[in-house]
Amino acid sequence: MKKLLVVLLVFFSLIIGMLNLSSPTKLSFCQQEIQIFNQYYQDRTAGSDGENETADFIMNTLISIGIKPLYSTYKQAFNYSYSSSQNVIGVIDNNSANYVVIGSHYDNVFVEDKSYGINDNASGVVTSLNLAKLLKDEKLDYNIIFAYFGAEEVGLKGSEYFLNSLQKKILDNIILYINLDSIGAGDNLYYYHYDLKTIYGNFIDNFANNYKILKLGKDKLYSNISAFGINYNHIGLNSDNASFLKKGINSLTFFAGNLSATGFGFFETEGQDKIMHTSDNMQTTEEVFGEKFYSNMESVNNFVYNLMISKDFVSNMLEREINPTLLSIWFLKLIGILLIICLTLITLVVYICKKKRKTL
Ligand SMILES: [Zn+2]
Image (cartoon, rainbow, N blue to C red; front, side, top):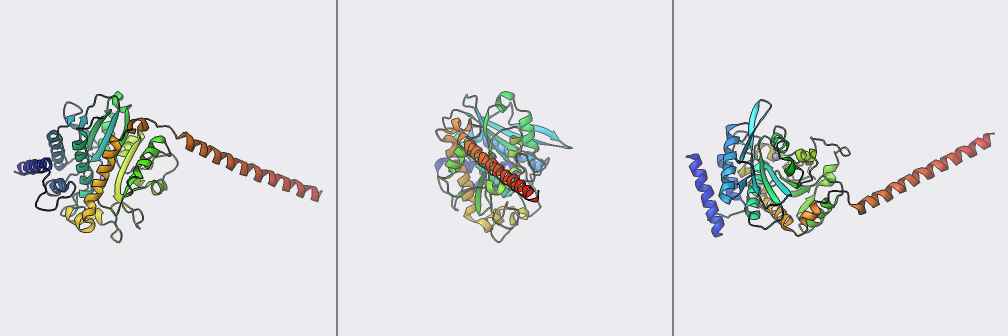
């Protein structure tokens, strides 16, 4: 019965989408799909039956929009610790050597009658499914993998398994990983790329200048990071993009939040710190954030879509090295610092010598 209702809901939302009709209630970006998660897939705890049923729902949605599986089946089962989970992997094959991966985790932290992972991370999953719909008919010169990861909340297990089992010819040719995690509930939208001034990073920053609503979170995000090391408690690396970074793959992560708030920054809104941690359901997100919850998702959708269809996207993503202009600025800064150190040392030596002569 539950499955039949879900199939009917998906069917009608697709028909409405195709006919471009508005429903009797106000339709916001992917609101109907969010409703399906809120009503039918509340418990998606890693390793649970609910997680597996959600994987079926994602798989059926991919089938309905015409996305092919990357392997012989959409679902990629795996074991971790004493449990098992599954990823759902689809692909748009444009006959290219290069790949972009768009990823989102669909498992959640479930709290009965309170938290159903609507922001974390139904918001990312439904936006990714919408992007699959949009990008399917674009003529692009690279392939796109749509990855829906299980068992993220227990330590990024799904993305780790996906990468470890991926064919080398794909792994070596991922030009960008795009991570969508908790992109609805927040006063602000942030993006994050761990690149330390590369050409690909600059291209994204320049592109983002057209989207004033997006804030580059890296100043805040870099603040806790130790040089080039990976700190898993770090907010910017607290999601599946960390698995890709470990493999040396450039990534672009989106999340909503309020980094100026007093607490952790994720899920926060001014004056209501951490509300989303314990009440991540549709009613609370709509009460606290209203239309912003949906407009945030839509903004990320538009950003990613326009970035991916932009003319110089591939050539810039392939430029992974440090930007030479910035490198020369760093070099000049280094020379300046060395000069200051030398001058200080010389002054010190002269001063000591003069003092010694006086005492003699
Ligand atoms: Zn998450």
